[in-house]
Amino acid sequence: MHDSMSAGYASTPPEIASKQPPCGFPSESAISPPRFDVLATSISIVNPALFCDTVDAFFAMKERQPGAYVVFRDVHGVVRAIDEPRLQEAHRKALIVAPDGLPLAWLGHIRGHRGIQRVCGPDTLPLMCAHGLTKGRRHVFVGGTPETLAALAKNLEARFPGLIIAALISPPFRALSEDETLDLVRRINDAKPDFIWVGLGSPKQDLWMLDHARQFPGALCMGVGAAFDMHAGHVKRCPDWLQSLGLEWSYRAAQEPGRLLKRYLSVVPRFLWLLTTESLRRRGATVEIGR
Image (cartoon, rainbow, N blue to C red; front, side, top):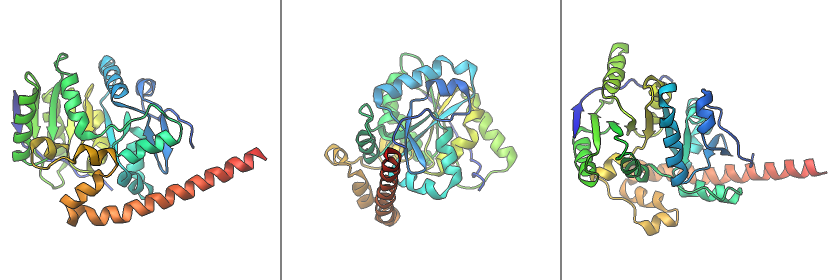
């Protein structure tokens, strides 16, 4: 079952060792998985099982804290954050910054974090739908077109009988007034969500969650981007064998060359260069300390 509503959203104003993320609330810091640094971003050391455990821990204390959010981070987002302090802040304040891209999970393994695995948005959406069924979790979806949301809801309800979709919100791509933004927050809260799935694209969805997640007490926002189109059946998912090789980016670039090819051709070399120089700097610092 689900309710549909249409609303807009306000545009957002302009070391190798693991560590606990600097969350803004002590209760979140207690359950947030440790992280390791990749350039200007700290990536959570998680796998699907630990992700589920963290979500369960959050809901176990949900009455005692404001809403929180999860960022699913790929290499593009890591590189972009270097030049965007607000995106760095969004990463820093997230409950989890999951390794959405397989290269980030591989890097975690290289750094000695053997338990880390890829946890991406398109996989997490059905995982949480199934995981929350017996608990009666309520889901709200924000983003995408009305057609995409309708197809998404139909497919999820068919796959997970009894799934509670409390609201489908298709926002227009324009800035809202303060009153309109307050109305959007009210609409979401009126749906009494447990999960708020945000599909506005990155980094827009990450900054939206930074600005608004704490306005939804006890709810967990998840920025899953293209997962809406994939599970609506509008975009074909990359074959498993290509995913296992870390080449999903090439498949997506072939699907949307005009939007993604230039991005990947500029981001990947820069990421490798910055990662190499950072590693050399770390190695040099280690040698100096050892002298």
